[in-house]
Length: 504
Image (cartoon, rainbow, N blue to C red; front, side, top):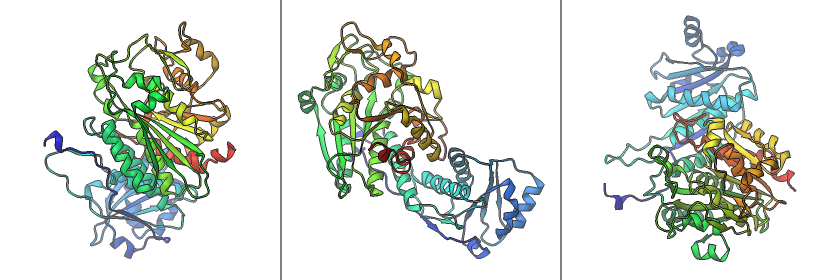
């Protein structure tokens, strides 16, 4: 396959339809299903009687007892030969644990390639609703494929129907939109760097802007020079033909011109490390260093599809961190768009340079909240592993709200300290601030303290260091290594948590 024939396409929506049945499953329903997923609670085993295959399931559980969160699969009697995947959730399990269990239940029925799937929870509300939500989210996540470039085309996806039994109410339309966002973020992040370049990325974004009616403008080198964005331009001067900032605007009726939220994303399409060149293993997957921009873009698309009643902008910092005779160097001094001078220490701390100017530009539109996403520091991964992402904010009162959105969505975040005394590690003798410290201690916190300088003090800001953007074997209900972490979290924060109302 010639390189010239490879183009950046956006993911197709899977042929999956989720419908709410609103009653208990009957033997007639079962005969029409290829697979059924059942989640119960140990204290609710008496409710097995509501299932048409209760006796088979009881016999299986009696022969071999089942631990909480373990899965039992069996082929049910009858001409349909329906596969059943059964699990008992731990008492008071949180959303992450339910999503994780749902991902494993989805994998348990994969081999039979079912096209008609039933999902049932025998728990009491609200646990039943959370389990059903997790199962539908997991089946959606499995339906979204990552890009493949094999010579032989992969078989087309089958049409799948998911039937949700029971009286628990869940928002199936919302789950489909969230899944689309997560699928879009994963699809873009997985693209090879020769396919997703700053230029091809911008063209794909332009297509989304036309589809959704967003206003779009692109700030290339000339525009950024006029705006004084020296931090951004320092990174891109070794590869300046394509880099720049994409600004997208969603405005529902009667929302006004000012956005309620500005979503900012780091979009480094490939990161060599620059003059401070990365070693092989550290550079190998640096095509995924644009994951923050993919999350910001996906959240904007989800807010649009949900017809959110507030205006939202996305600011995507698209660039490559390349080497070359014009590459920026340690001990360079540059001036950012807000006038701050920066002493460069390490060329591989390019993300905070790009975000500095992008945050400053986003701040000029006066949103209530700036929310940025970036695969920014290895220190955050070292602190949390890839199970959580790190969060930072200039509003201490928002820390519990931010962590609460992580708990409720199942995309967990941990808020780190932001005390002023960390700034002493970024003091420069010749400029306003060091880009980073010479050593790497608490670099995730120092990076956040650096970024804070570029957000106006009177605007609330939250920064998410995406430690959980990639994890071998996936995370929660997402079973691909690239997780798309951040979409569910951001939607919960912006819509359910009431954070925007609190900032009035």
